[in-house]
Length: 410
Ligand code: DWN
Image (tube, rainbow, N blue to C red; front, side):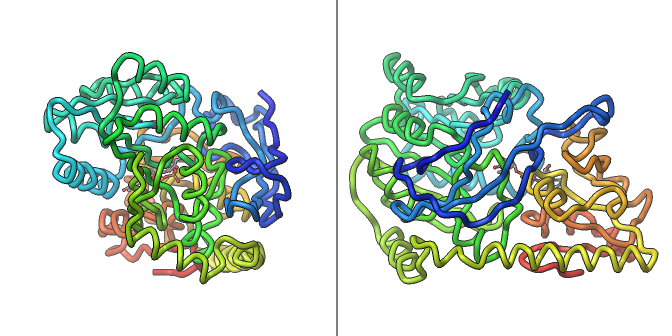
């Protein structure tokens, strides 16, 4: 299925998009390769990052059809990260208390994956509804008692649910707003689905952290948009929604949690971040101008480090068959000649190969079985959880390499 390119901004629709970074033609980050597919041609798509000077949104030009991205064997399951489960549970318990949710409430999650978040509402006796197009995670959610529509969330589906009287007290959307091709339709759907007194709680990677920490690996075809508070505020207001509170989070390399309502009552956390972004120029192209140069610097430094270690006869593996890991190994050119294998706890990924570079993926036990000298941490956003878990590998002398914001050996 062919991809398409936007000519105007995904949010405000204006032209004049300015180039920021070109990562070249890149395979789909979550399309892992099976042994049977190794000799088959692998689709690769342009990955060009641009900036809208009118509304401040950083975005990619290419739109890969969502049916291709979130296909039936989409391998991402949220519940393989204990830190993410703790993060999500704390979010839910906070909202139950703050919003006085109970048996007559409805909590909906858009891109609900395997029920990792909604399960916390269900356990508290609060009615839930998951919506996710990926068949595997949706089935897993149903298996733990989270009713899930295996569909894409659209403005039409929102109207259908509202028509059935299923408007929500809380709408969650974690790492999905950046993923949808119809950005405005998706936000309009949230406005339709929310009760007048409801709140949408949306998490997105924060573009300020992405740029400042050089997190270029967070750029892949699933992530169409990269939000600042300024850009998302413009997007929401266009649909009669108001960003009233925002929290900065460490998850996924730095994220924003947006509290969005149908009533405008902009709080100090929003005003402060809008002022900070204006002072730093996050809403202007200059903030992004040297990003490409810094990405090139990381690429050359990491390649030089790995080649030196390999040249010294050291063995190198990697941890985390993450989508971000696919961007990193493909852009930098890390193949089986440098990285012997990748390990990952997600059993749906084990036995497959990384997109593009075809590095084999095994379970984490492979680290103790083979004791590689170094492990490149592709899932660096979970560094503490993973290194705690791999204490024995480290006790035996194994060392982790953190790739970003600059390569360093721990
Ligand atoms: O936006 C997205 C983010 C939120 O999640 C999705 N489009 C796809 C996915 O991106 P990712 O694959 O880069 O996300 P993660 O969660 O950073 O990937 C971590 C990988 O590491 C997963 O495959 C699970 C694995 N893992 C592990 O093997 N052991 C993770 C932990 C914490 C562990 O202990």
